[in-house]
Image 1 (cartoon, rainbow, N blue to C red):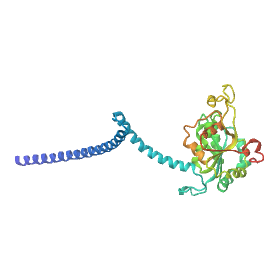
Image 2: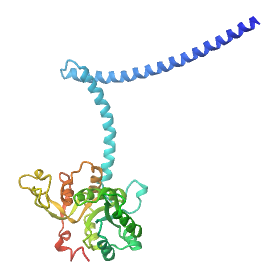
Image 3: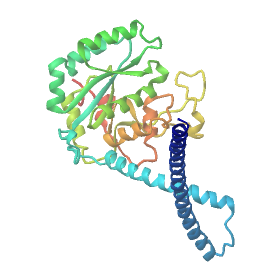
Image 4: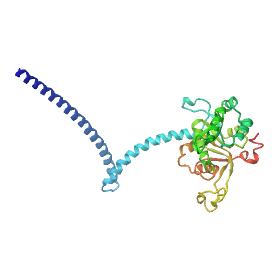
Length: 339
């Protein structure tokens, strides 16, 4: 009995020692792999630093400081990140600044690109204006879909939300839209006269992300448009990838806080206090590339007191073809774009 007990204790001890040895071997292997990988990374870093040191030696630099060593390593990492970003940016530029009726490489965009997306800027309490536009030139239901499918023109009313989300203003718009299905409702935008420039920006962002079109047009809800005339005018500019079309003007900047058209950033416009050239806000059009530019840079584009001056400011400094077309001016609407 004593011999068997001793044998069992010996067997258990041997088993436990084997398990312990196996665990230690696993830890040793993992430690070896970790150290080897770090040595490999360090070797790469040292190789890079030696090359940099050789360059500096040839340029009569005598030493590389610790701070410079850290900067070199950081620069190397940043360079790798920048290379990846540049590849993405190149792809974005090609997508945003190459015009054409057909997408070249994406089977999802094999359909014919729309000619234009027209956003009719409206607000609460303007249902009579909207109904008049639907009856006069926008159409509803099947006729609205036919306009989009056959002529390539998408038309929608554009509105934000009430400051008190879910109140009667919002429910009235939701109810109207459930019947007509012809709204772009900007859920993240609060309707307010002083926020109109931001509303324009949100419209272009929404429109270019939802519809692939050659042009994006903004029109007020008291303008009556001849769709065929507008379509013909836009078609004549298909050869211009970055075009801004409208009745160009330059308005006075008012610095008096009590003035109706007060511009808080008046000091940015110099001593003459005149806005740069921009298209009148009643009706203007931008090309697809410019709409995509707004979408990409939405967070850093400045807005001013006037929505039309704000839109014009976004294209200052860009290689944009400003087209001053008299058919977009108020005096020409009767014969050009209105019914």
